[in-house]
Amino acid sequence: RKEVEQDPGPFNVPEGATVAFNCTYSNSASQSFFWYRQDCRKEPKLLMSVYSSGNEDGRFTAQLNRASQYISLLIRDSKLSDSATYLCVVRGSWGKLQFGAGTQVVVTP
Amino acid sequence: NAGVTQTPKFQVLKTGQSMTLQCAQDMNHEYMSWYRQDPGMGLRLIHYSVGAGITDQGEVPNGYNVSRSTTEDFPLRLLSAAPSQTSVYFCASSNPPGTSGREQFFGPGTRLTVL
Image 1: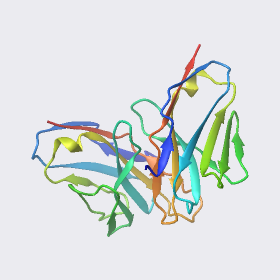
Image 2: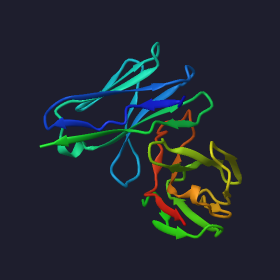
Image 3: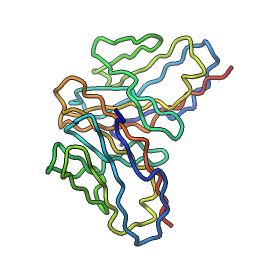
């Protein structure tokens, strides 16, 4: 079983709609959680950290559910520029990062 | 600041050839890492370094060597290239865990094909 699992998608979303997707992790001792964004053939870039109480950054909302061991990302009012692959990243107690394979989001006009 | 830079951007090798992928950062980060990204898989850690002169193996170290003689540079050496090493390689740097600003900054990647 992979340490971090994501639905690969693609999630096809009309412009202006809301999309949400999850990521599950297997190590209950994981300490930190992040969402990174990766555009086609580019490097990953940090989108947002995920805090225990949930957090928002503009149109993006991240949630953490430690009991069920998953994190989620919700994008409101989707823009064409939100089309990308979203990587779930988990930092374990040993400090190293584990990456999910990514969820592809395609926002259509 | 240039951030994290990698060279070359593209490379084609024949099986058995060796080469070095270059990585440099100008943010004075102590932590540097090399990852490979393959289709359908998350980034996998090859080697990492917590400071000049200190390196350690990651999840998939076989066939690769690293050294860290300066804070800025962290080259990755392929000893004898194999088709299984065809991948996209990313170098990353960050401050240590437990410090503020722990975001990992990635270089633009090197696309390597081994024939």
